[in-house]
Length: 388
Ligand SMILES: [Fe+2]
Image (cartoon, rainbow, N blue to C red; front, side, top):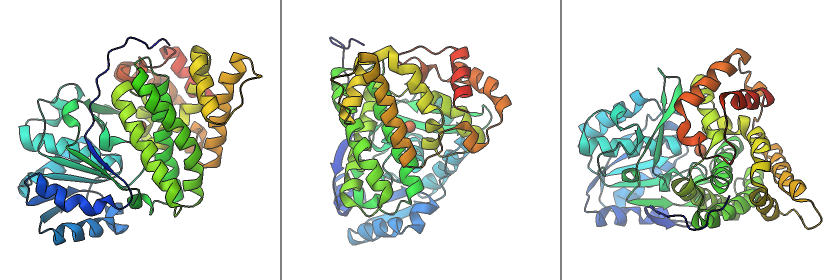
């Protein structure tokens, strides 16, 4: 895909990245002029001791904290409303989103609701958010969604049985505090599912029709870094260099989402995630490899570049072989991290393939249009079938 001469808009928060940077969060809140914060998080983050660590830092800085720790795994619209009510009751005017993508996405919308009121449903869609929310600091405890730097917030719409997103530059945080130390307690299965999500952002963003020279630079580097460090982080969660690289790679992936967007495996994952409540990264991975089979020949140069950064010596290969080799490397990565990557692995009801394909076409055009190969309803059915 020729991507020269394209317009580029880059919107990212201020970023504080590195081992131990969480210690600076108290001073950062003070510099925002706040003396009280509402931390939005989930019970897993609390159980891992991360919440207490952050509370300790705020205590030292003399900042009062209210805590909402009831973010759901794949948060529903109702869950956001509940978090908003509690934050509002705590008269919170600065939000700290602490956790995986779920806590962070809920935080983004709570910040908007605190400032602008109104109904969450009105803000879903592209550019529906009326303006920036109250000051927000986002602190990821996984290395996956990149949501700490992104302009997206995704929720489960239980009635529509799919995931729906708000997309707006107003959702970009004031500050992202990305401290790889906070990701060390993730068990291997979570390292795998969140890391897979990051990898898919990098790959889908790299081959997106919205890609630009700037997104390519970040996306290809994220592919390289995640391919190299995800197996090591999966194998040994205490491997600090691997955790550092994963936090960095997933953050790059989040910026890539802002610049170039994800595509088909995200689109196909949303009805599955809504029905089966699998982790987002697993949902995407269930069709990812077949989506890649569908995409590879549509952009041979980019798949070849991905093969090369994943260590494949392509010099003696035909262009098609080289591009196909990228998919083979992806397959090896997926096998190594033991993540479910077949619909049969979650016992998906085969009769749902048809309604899911219809749902994707109806609800996920934002994502579908970005792939290098345009997918019709029939293509989507075929990908689901091949992924079974
Ligand atoms: Fe994702």
